[in-house]
Image (tube, rainbow, N blue to C red):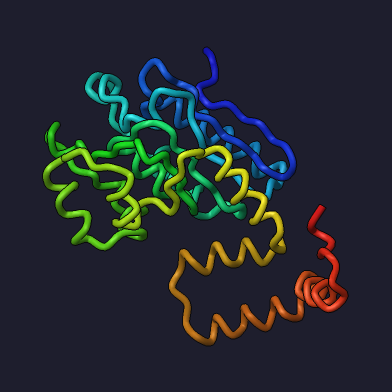
Length: 242
């Protein structure tokens, strides 16, 4: 059986491509299983940035409804994929150049940065087939306030990239998604690997002020922190910048 997710690794960046165009990259059991294989590969290679992208025409159509209507419903693997996007060490950039629906929005929203073409449309279509966007509410509510979600959630209406940006669902709207993703990846690679990983965690968790003090002091006294400060003083790139 052909793999439904492709992997490419170069220059510290791992590119994970959803490649099931026949069903608009719907979240079938096989696609999600292959997604975990791809995550394993990029984590084993210790890449510093992960890009989650897709084969046209769509980024992801959401759940594979044909599979859901005829087989056992078990979302465990999908839940784990959402969790892994948030907990893997490397920042994850979603590169979106096709429409996104339902569960696909959750997959997208679980990434750290989301770059979309201004022509892209979105919809939480769950209510129109008698279900609700339950699982994906976890990453989505982390990004968006509930009041801006109420309309799209309750109506299933289609909305555009500008509204998605206003909601906080995406971080960047760009005519050239690929070049924007390359630029963002290059900027992330300028940061210290440990510092970038710690910053990702910082953005995703609630911390007490004492925990933040401990983190700050640990990074300032770490080898990476000392190297970064020395490089700044000596007006040279730090050792992690190739």
